[in-house]
Length: 501
Image 1 (cartoon, rainbow, N blue to C red):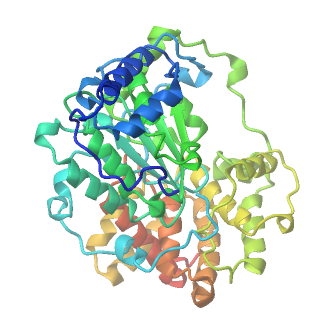
Image 2 (cartoon, rainbow, N blue to C red):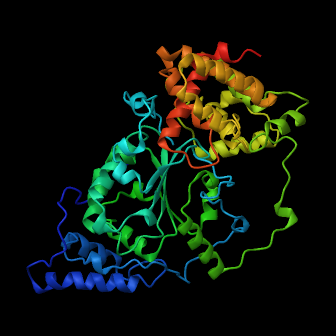
């Protein structure tokens, strides 16, 4: 992230009236009047925007009555430009439904693991949730980590405002510390934040002083690798707040902020079924859609069948049938063979990311059966494509059915884990899944063998590939991610013992 600019080092003042000239004393009321008027506009564009910013800078927010700016429980703005898409037809997954298909689950050249990454995400002794750091905050599930990355290999951090407890019963300073503690585990690599705004109100919203303090606390370390901040269900309230922050928010960071009016619009950017969307947020989204436009009818043309040459987003069985019985998908084979020859000694391979638009373009070319020459592209392109292929599978390569059995292995000693894992792989994994998994893991062991050059140890590779090989139908917890990493490392370390077929 970029450094804050403007009056970034000025201490935040509490909301008391300034002493001074009559002009100075009346300016906050003038600003408040403009904000009140602007809040009735969908675009939140002040008639005299520069005056508004100037007033904010001169007052240092001291004269601005933050508590007077109410955030309603429901806010429907008829003037918003609602661009509904067909995706609105689809029922959103319910994380509380046991039969839900909900499953858990970048781009700088120096996005490598730091020295403490293994300590943060490595295999740890199992502890009770209530004994974990910041349990007093974590128990509210305000901040959650999607168990699988987005479509381009970036970690997804979810913040749900509706889960904030009443301010009188909640320590927002602890929330700030918990946010930093959580982000510290991921900020060395590309990541995105999804902020569900609905549910923020006068009873649970943080103070304006806290917001300014939070922005300053999240320095360049946090802003640098944040690729997008998606604000879901934005209201005039949040647009006003962003405008108030304009004097201290850099232009570069401002470009990362994206408004998302409806949940279905998130499908353009992330796997929405991999995010645990609060029930209240889903209900609010349904009300918005019903109020502004009926759901369009489904047409046959919108149910397009997969192309015969398609490889991303289809099953391994489909690919095998469409490619003459070849078990290893062509895109997997081409990525692995190229990386074997050119990528084994590349520092940070699989931790670096690639241009999201280029990855999408490459996926489309493979789906259409076009020839691709990786020699014409950056080495990270095939690395990202290999991970994205695994993420785009309709079901994880280790299957939903195997997930609970694999998670139970952590209770066994190492020798027993190996015996039981070998049994599960040989007897319960579909044939296509077994041989594709074996092919990819064999290659990963070669990458790990070059760890002295590429800095990718077995653990680092387990952290990278684990969430792309295994995920559940439900939202993943930090504890389950640790178990996934542990099992994936077991697969790498004991590859020869486990894959005997």
